[in-house]
Length: 361
Image (cartoon, rainbow, N blue to C red; front, side, top):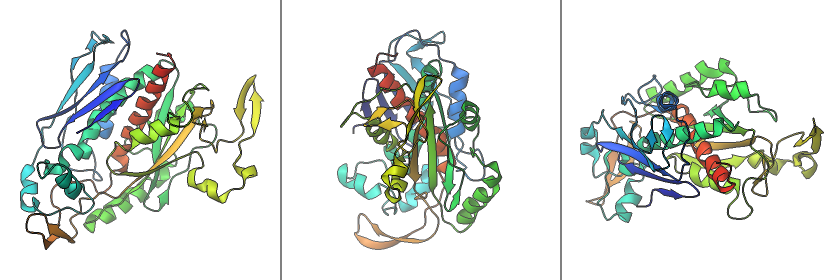
């Protein structure tokens, strides 16, 4: 199974949802980078389960045990390895449905690919639980970027049909920093209760809901990335799909571009204080796969949580007969709020990779 990002930095994600430990290895991070463990814990807590009514009741501390690569608060140049224990496991929840293929999950496809030897408990290695490992990697990368002036922030762009205010062409640093300290980040905070009620309504009906996350990266220097296969969109998109539940991504104006004329979509250039920029940012900070110096902005679609208690039709994988399925156990009725810091982490990983390529690290 390939769970390795083999870029200018290298990341390996390991473990299973109901195994004893999950974790990550990050390689090719330069020596001498100061790493604040408390800042890592903040990012881990934003993603951690069991924090509110809209999240799973599974309770995990998600405190990474760093066993190599960081000494006395500084990177050593060796691979950084962190272990995260799974403390709140209830595998019995899956015994009654072990042979029933869960709709929306990778039960069937992984059963076929691994000849029935896949770990089905909570999705095994394909579980959203593994995003804790991604968040750790992103928390490390984020600190490298912050010292170089890069700021990353994301918010809940929508829950079902309730939409937040989108980012504008100019994005204040304070806004991104504020969003990155919030477990339910919104630009228009008056929408929070409406969104929570929408999630709880689905939960009470034995169902789930999805939404969209919008992420921005500011102060990115122009000239990072490459055309064709190694563009910024390519790398971010490739990494973003490592998050289970992501079903789509768009940059800048995205699909809205199809309803615009060229004259409306084109971002006209201007000079401010001797610096070239664009008046609008429909291109999302990327032109030809290369950063333009404007904020990099992208949105990703998060599907409704697949594990729902509402009765569904399925198939018993062993008997090959029709079956009925109601997924019990502990599951998020909406994974969007907890996915926000993971999306930010992916953005940080991608940017560090481009910084490494450009010898800016």
